[in-house]
Structure formats: structure tokens, C-alpha cells
Amino acid sequence: MKPTLLVLAAGMGSRYGGLKQMDGLGPSGETIIDYSIYDAVKAGFGKVVYIVREYFKEQMEAAVKAKYSSVKCIDGEPLEFVFVTQELDKIPARFTLNPERQKPWGTAHAVLMAKDVIHEPFIIINGDDFYGRDSFRIAAEWCRSHQNTEGQYSIIGFEMDNTLSESGGVSRGICFYDEALNLTAIAEHLNIMKDPDGVVRGDNSVTGEHVELDAKALCSMNMWGLTPDYFAKSEAIFEGFLEQNINEPKKEFYIPYAMDCIIKGGIGKCDVLATPSRWFGVTYKEDRPGVVAKFQQLVDEGIYPSPLY
Image (tube, rainbow, N blue to C red; front, side):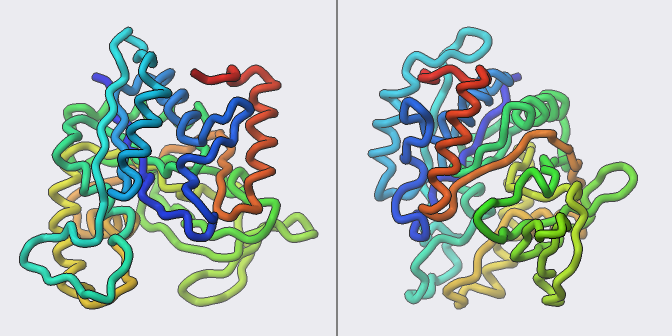
């Protein structure tokens, strides 16, 4: 069984100033997604599903066809690519869209767009985040061991100090879990950074309190492992979400919210899988030089070839 990689690439890049998904950051113009796909193929993935917006779908498809046409899976078969679109009007027919709404419904809604094209265990990633090869190896192993299970999901947790930015505070969801490493909650914290005294601190999003944080605490970087039965559960949760929020122009349906409903509703569990990888990514244009330097360093160290393809 070859798991599927689901890439969330529908973000419009308004803060970044352009399509992050298409920005060449590697020494030979590689995008962050290029590195994710390279690591995923090495880990045994067989299909890549892109969630995109309709207005740049054709551009993305052309770029993918040109770049990956010769890429083979570890069994020698061609790597499969599928494109699906996320638009704000893709909601159940019984709901009437608020005309004030200008953007889609968030990451969990984006995942639902792939329900008709994914029938095997799969991993979700952001298109503008670098996760590292160990993360994909861990995720692939989880998928292969859960190909015949239902109601069991996973999140790949990164150590907090492996996700901090050198240019300012970041927001992170800290994972809480029981002795069996089952996720119990994700607590969002804002403005997280390492202070001059070496201590990591951030603002609790609920209380607003500025608190000291464990630098080794596992946090979510939106890398999830799911089985296909997740779609039906999430679809039902989304309908309940819309019943409460259909007229709210800015409310979004996020994956942590859907997973929280699944866990608290007793219809599924979520394994917390720790990865030693160091995350990095681009949010603002100012992040770009640092990411370019990191990819150059990885190439210089022999971790990645240049060009990748």
C-alpha cells in the first residue's frame, strides 16, 4: 500500500505578496513543495493530491507536469498527481452562502475537497512548510500500519524549539496527550519566541496570559495522518459548524477543531507521533532569504541533490 500526500496549496499568499506555492527557494529554483514531494517519494508515497484555487489551477498543473513527469515511486511506477479545487461556495446545498464571504472555509474544509479522490491512508501538509525527511518516514510508517483501520488518526508533533522563527514571534498549537500518546487537546499560543534569557514564552490564546513554555513540548505544524473514514466524520461536523456559522463571513473550519470534535465525541482517537525534524517555512516576504540559505545549507551538506529533479 502506497499512502497519499495531500498538499494544502490553496492559500492566496496575501501576506507573502504572491503565490508561495510557486516561489523557487532552492539553489536550482526548487519550491518548498518540491522538497516535500522528494521526501514523500523516498518514504514510499504513491500519489500527490493538490488542493488549489481555480484561478491558478491551470498554472500549477502545467508546472507539475513539466517538473515531475519522470518521477517514479520506489516500486518504479509513475507518481500520480490529482488536482482538486477549494472555493467558498463548495458547501452542502441546504446552506445559502453569505454574500459578504470572500475566502474559503479553512483547512478542514480544504481536506473535504479530496474525499472523492483519496481511498487510502493519507498525510496532510501545508504547501509552504518544510517538514524534513524524518517526518515523512514516520508518517509513511503510520499509514502503512493503519491501512485497514478506522477511527484512528495521527498528528506529527514537532518540538517547539525546532519551529521557532529568528525574525519574530510565531503562533503554535501545543499538543496535550495521555500516557498512551493519544491526543487530548491542542492549546493555541501566540507570539511565541525565545527571550534573551533563553526561555521560550508565549501568550495563551484563551487567557491572554504571557507564560513560560517547554521548549521541547510537541506542537502542531498541520501535518496529520488520516484514514478515509475521516471524510464522513468531518463532513458531518462541518454541517454542524455551518449551522452555527453560515452567516459569519470570517469564521473558518480548521482541522484541529474537527479533530477535537472527533476525540470529544468518542468517534476516533489521534496518535501523537514525535519527529526530530526541524521545521521552517515562509509567511512573510522577509522570511525568504533565511529559507533560501537553509536550503543551500542542506544541499551543501549532501542531504539533497541540486537540482532535485
